[in-house]
Image (cartoon, helix red, strand yellow):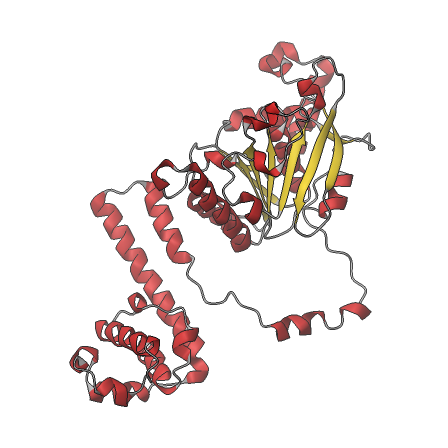
Amino acid sequence: MTAEKALLGSILKANYLLKDTIIQASHFEDLRHRSLYQTMNELSRKGQAVDIITLSSLTNLEIIGGITYLHDLQSYANVERFEDFENIILTAWKEREKRNILTRAREEDWEIHKVVRSLDEINQAKLDDYTSIQAEITEIYEAPWTEVTQERGVTTGLLELNQYTNGWQDGEVTIIAARPSMGKTDVLIHLAKQAGWQDHMPIIFSLEMPTRSITHRLIASTGSFNRIRMRNLANGLTEKQKKEWPTVLGLLSKTNIEIFDEAGQSISEMRAKTRKLVHQHDKKPVIFIDYLTLIRSTNTYSGNAHLQVTEISKDLKALAKEFNCPVICLAQLSRSVEKRADKRPIMSDIRESGSVEQDADVIIFLYREKYYDKASSSEVLEMIIAKNRNGPIGTVQTRYNEYTGEIKDVLDPRTV
């Protein structure tokens, strides 16, 4: 209770603190402190002074402890330590809320996703999300005279795409959207492998495809194995491929890929699972999600898919910022693409787009001419960078083998 007294006493001494804090009345454990804090806020909203004289004139003075108690609170005031008091109060509140949630969950037999979501919401409350411009300036002051290695994001494994994006950046959300059968999942698998081989921790949330199918695709693209022939490994693989099998699996094991394949996962569930892995492994996560409209929103919005996607889009951005890691999410495009002569996608084609266009840092569309022209022998998969918040837009051409799932640079013969 001492921190609560100190915080309230500090506000009595310096009223401006009341507008600078994120502490709410519900964060206080002592009921007198809750009532006093609410009263302070009401006075502040009315433009009145928040001091003992004003408070002593209230008819409900006993509810907030009485005049003697107010004088006592002032003796605890320490404006310089105000942030410490905030953190102590917030930490204590979190612990109480966690205990309350677990008790209610047990008594009311909550589903596990509700428990996870409720606990996760508590953990989001924080005070240390600011940086002063003076601190930032101090950090970069000597930069023009200091030689440093250019920082790059998580490599895409594609030389030209890296030139556009400088790799996937921490805290950014990338949406990769296409019509069915364009190669979205193979692109995601390619990107996950590249991140893993660069000693990051790729986490794949596969909301449609089971882990075994993802694993087969990973093996096929790594070993250049035809996926159809992999349906019967004993008879489908050549003797040469069988000899290569242990090497391919060994190479794949070095990717450190983690896969969650439960259908209908919410962002809060993904956050909890990611946090657990981060605690277990000392590696930077890179989050991959397949795909956007299969993510379960916390609110049904009476079936309004547009509002559901808007919520999910904002939650994806919050997820990227919380873990300071790249988040790459696949998305389906609407059928409106098929009605145009030029079937290359545009922004409005993102299905139930919500605020995706606004929230995403990078939006990439996939397009294969061969999908629409069956007579074509082209292996070109176009990656159309339609939005790039921190870089140029344009089209990257890659080579895509639809039988093995391999993605390569057009101008680089190496498999990547």
